[in-house]
Amino acid sequence: MSEQDKVHDLLVVGGGINGTGIAADAAGRGLDVVLCEMNDLASATSSSSTKLIHGGLRYLEQYEFRLVREALAEREVLLRNAPHIIWPMRFQLPHRKHLRPRWMIRIGLFLYDSLSKRVSLPASRGLRFGADSPLLPELRHGFEYSDAWVDDARLVVLNAMQARARGAEILVRTRCVALTAEAGIWTAVLESATGQTSVRARAVVNAAGPWVERFAGSVLAENQSNPVRLVKGCHIVVPRMFPGDEAYMLQNDDGRVVFVIPYEQDFTLIGTTEEDYKDDPALARISDWEVDYLINLVNSCFRQKINRDSVVHDFAGVRPLIGDEGTANASKVSRDYTLVLNTTKAPLLTVYGGKITTYRKLAEAVMHKLRIIFPQMTGDWTATAKLPGGNFVSKAELAAELRKRVPWLPEAILQRWLRQYGSCTLEFLAGVSSLEDLGEDFGHGLHAIEVNYLQSREWAQTAEDILWRRTKLGLHFTQQEEERLADWLSSRTTDTHIS
Image (cartoon, rainbow, N blue to C red; front, side, top):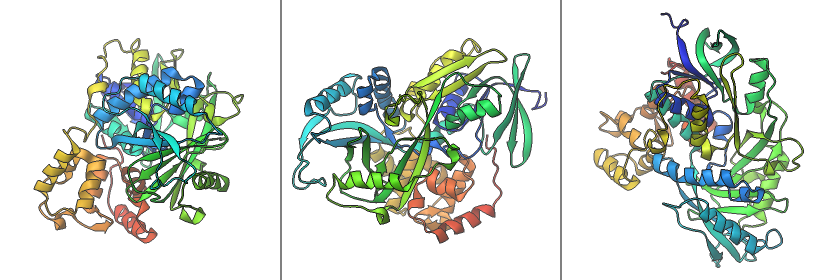
């Protein structure tokens, strides 16, 4: 049978966190899966989040108790399954009495602690800020609670790697340009730099994120039944504002909250704004007023002041949320997800909404809906499955093992590799016995051996893929250094369709 005659079980359209999570779950149940992504993995919303694994304390005000409970339970699952890219973080919430009364926050934190069983994280508590606090002196009281931090883009890549390990085919920079059904089977036309090819599948999942409606309208020529509200969220990055590992959650007069988070050792991440968005999600950019909004809120709470010249990086992402325009404040639109299965022509499941914390539960829910199509598939499995690189007892023990094997490796590189690759670091250190064996140094600890690994194992093709999604070294690279890396990459032949 030729490849074009072969009928796969599932075609997943979209290489963000939902698409890769679904592909991994489905492949692990024994289904034959193909995933296509029109750009790089995590190239849009899934690399533009606030990078938190959290229940969403503020969602309690919208009575989203089911979503918060599910997210809090997932927080423990993900901390266990991906300890290299996800770790606990304490958040301090300064009390601004003209916004929310103290009793309301205390009750909210009690609910937050109680909605799900805490295994690894301490409970919330009240605080009195001292003279050493980075906050303004008038902010004397507050609260502290626990959540977790995640490298969002790497979480997507690890799910794609998990899917591949279970037999899925992952096609990046491959756009689905046509989709037709005949006799209950989908035929998809996939377009990449090398031309077009056809893929047949028994079912299709539309996990195109903010493009979910555009894909349905342009490729499927169908109108979707659920109104998708696109909400743009923007972040800025500034040099490190305060010592310590704690983050801050700031309340603003308009009801929004903004996080101020230690980021990549030398920086502070600030965000997010939330505004309705009507344009192509690929064109989303931060506006001047959004930069000013974040700066003004931070300056109203912190001793150290920032301005536009402080901003070293910014990014914008578009969330596809379920909600009509009647909800005036975009920040109050639900982050919950909706799944719609249509079997009129052939099985088509559309994913609406969702948040990065609950991606695994969303994927399970997708598979439960598809069980009527694939009754032979096996049961749930991802709750106890370590993501690639997460199979180690503790970071301290893994670090000690690496130091023993490569004592000549600079500590800064070792620590970064632990945070990004975990135990997968051992893969690209096989046969390496000296610093020279790491190959060409592109700057800031990025060597050819790591770049080769990212190309051959993680679908990276461009300097942007490597510097901003596989790593965050773009925060340190100069334009000249980035161009040098890009030139080196362009001189090499890369197989786009790693499988």
